[in-house]
Image (cartoon, rainbow, N blue to C red; front, side, top):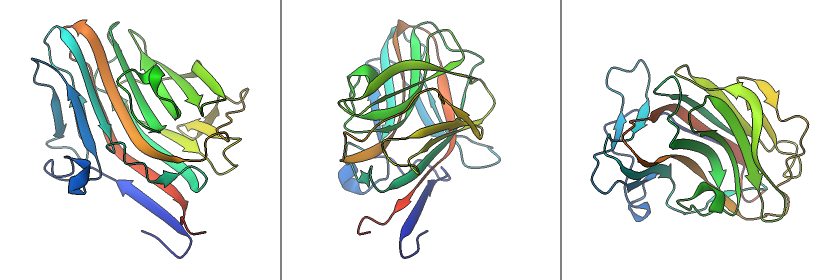
Length: 224
């Protein structure tokens, strides 16, 4: 929905897998699937009380990478964004030691999360439930900072707020501010961003996954 000067876009994942495909097909999301032999699962959750999408790795012992993103079609001006919200959970009580999971907003995507040049993301790494955060605008950067929060099989709300400006980006988990001792400065990047969620593993048989309830992005009209 939109009015004269703001927009709100909410992806609520109701459907039958009709939202994914090539970016040129005018799909809101593209799936990047690196699984040479395994049949990874990218599917709406049957019987869910609300629209949900689950991404789950396959049991084959191989490197796998499943990413839900916007095909590197960058359309959200960082200087016009006010808030991005993800409601997500893990599909297992804790991650495997070979797995990692990340979500947030980024510039162009890379298979290796640390190689993404511009990003504000939350992460889970290895056999843990700790939620980490990191940001990078090409000049200012901070990697893998402990938010003091955990994520498991119960949904939590994650917010990236640009309302105070790109030089003071703020993070919230279930409404509570995190990383308050840090100044998250993204002001050296003045380009566009895209939505991003990625789970991956090195060669291992685990079937870790995550489920997303919705993603919501808010901002000001690009002409204002």
